[in-house]
Image 1 (cartoon, helix red, strand yellow):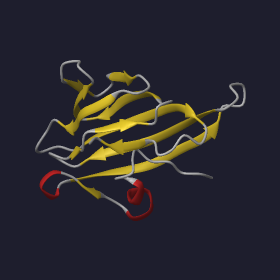
Image 2 (cartoon, helix red, strand yellow):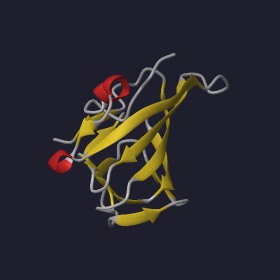
Image 3 (tube, helix red, strand yellow):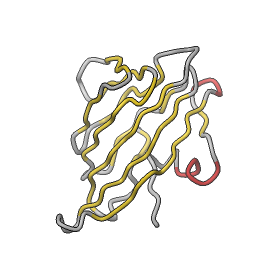
Image 4 (cartoon, helix red, strand yellow):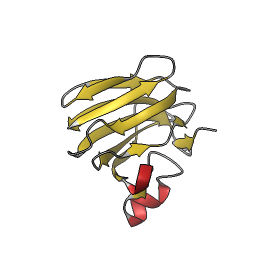
Length: 136
């Protein structure tokens, strides 16, 4: 089974554990699913779970050009800003999407005291890697 993660920075996370974020605070990326979509040739569905420690954040990043992403907050509160849309805090049960080619400028736990977790579902061209690249 192939495992893809949320980014080049997080590639080691799938193998070794937490990745370092702001001021030593970390998030953990856990691959959950990776499967070709049999009735949509050339497309795959990839799912990862991202757990943010209190105050942790992901660096600004972009995703694979073909990636359409649906993000769903499993617990806690996540602050997100995609492209020129105003930053927003999403609570448990809320969701957003990222269109192909989007720049994810902010992705962080909105709380300094409680953990937060989200599920990221990618519909992507099979083999389009890396899924995430830190912004320049």
